[in-house]
Structure formats: structure tokens, C-alpha cells
Length: 271
Image (cartoon, rainbow, N blue to C red; front, side, top):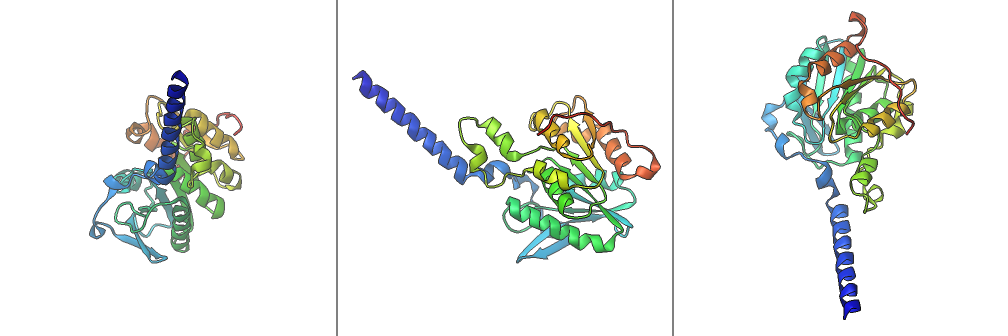
């Protein structure tokens, strides 16, 4: 009787494990992308990019400037909320914010390949109208920005609360599952870092509960030469956006002619 119950219990655990495995595999993009709170009407946007039968929409700030900045938001960011800060920090640059597929007023569904392809298309649409294009990516957007900087001649690159690999983070959070193998959208920024040849600034939140410090440091170690690196103390993944040091660092890095950026180069372990 005891053996029977043990077998039954083990069978139940196995079925539960398989069920969780299937759920993680089928629903993985629902765990990665959170567009629900970002939606706006198309009439509230002022910029559109049409490609592959999909219309992506967003905003343009400070139009007509010689230099440009393209912003890529996080996986739950309503990027329109960043307009006031970016318009001020990037004074003297035209700023482009384009919502990912399925976010804001953009059509389609988000996926790594689509986000990368759309980001390259945005860079290619913007670049002919400006002398140079800088990139700023926050959280998930740091993965998009890193990819673009590795494949296009970006003037400079700012990565805010970045990671080396979504696959590595997922594996650490779900150690009993082969999460890294199951993920379709891996966002492995460490692979693209060696091909980035512009100045890079990394801004890390000192109390980030979403992106492990080790992940950010591994990414930093993948760049050659090492990036400028700032840790904003006592800020978490989201409160960093309200920290004065964050805006000051971005402003200084985007305006190198006005004085040295207040960023230190720090050692980081190899990925």
C-alpha cells in the first residue's frame, strides 16, 4: 500500500511538473511582455512607421534638431510618460519614441525578432534626417538598443537597468525548469556588446529587484572598451526614473561638449 501511494504521489508531481513546463512554454511571452497599461488611441500619437502590413505609432519631440535620440522602453512602460524628461534631458536633439508592437497605439504582437527588426527600421528611417543618432534603452529596451547599436552606426548608447541575457535571468528564477532552453525571446545583449563601437553609458539601480547586479556587470564586461558606469544608490528598478542622478547622467552623456559626464568606469566580472 505504501509503495502504491508513493508511486501515486510521484506521478502527480510529474504531471504537475509537465503541466507547468507546458504553461511556461506556451505562455512565455505573457510573462515577458506587459502592454496592457500602455495602450492609447492612435489619435494621441504624432509619428507612425509602416512596415510589413503593421503600423507602429509613437511620438517625436524637439523636431528639426541636427542630432537625434531614439528611446526604447521597458516591457511594461508607457513610453509617452517619458516624454517630458527626455525632451528636457535631450535638449538640442530630436527624440523619437516608438511603441513596440502591441504597445501604445501600435499594431501587431511583440516578439524579439519583430522588435529588433522594427528598431532597425526606425533607425534607418531616422538617420537620413540627422547628422547622428544616439540610442537609449531601459530594461527590456536595453536589449533592443544593444542590438541596434551592434548593427547600425549609433553615435552613443545609454543602457538603463540593463541585463546580459533574459534567458539567464529566467533560468535563475526558475531553476527547476530548463527555462533558458524553452525561451524563444532570449535577448542576449552580451552577444551584441562586442560589436558596439560607440561610447556607452550604463545606469544601474542600486536596489534593483528585477535585474540582478551580476547580470548588469556581466553585460558591462562584454563591452570593449569598458563603458561608463553609474550606480544610483537607494533606487530600485522603477524609482530610478525619478532619481535626479539618472537625469543628470543622461544629460551629461548626451551633451559631451558641455563638460565631462559624471560616470565612473568600474571593473566588472567576465560574462
